[in-house]
Length: 161
Image 1 (cartoon, helix red, strand yellow):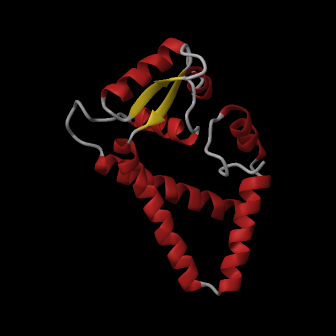
Image 2 (cartoon, rainbow, N blue to C red):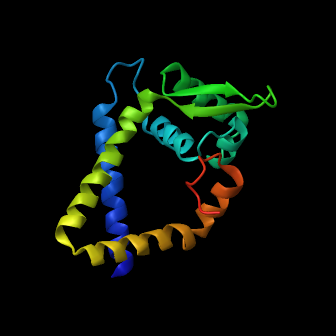
């Protein structure tokens, strides 16, 4: 039952995001993202400011294959490449405001859900649910957390120490 409920919520959040992202992506061929490119841009966003190598490793692709995906995203204006100030050979990837405008639809939906939760449950229930979600994220998703701690260049405070 719990597994089914978690899967159902996860699936609905993904479907909402996919529906919104494909509605917002321009039909102009020069701007259009494929589904795989949208996933790649989202991975770059989720990883913080990964290097090209970190991104390639994350998506389990060769350097040339990752470079091709990066070039397409950059050409369409969804990501930028920045040389590391410490070592100019290292390139970091970042999403642009253009991507964030598309991605923001999922954040808005999460805000809507949070307001609905607050409206339908007591403050104590909301606090307990929030505490449980924090524990799940910080302590029970160790596979993802370990990867992100080691590999991702996330802003301070995103990952618990």
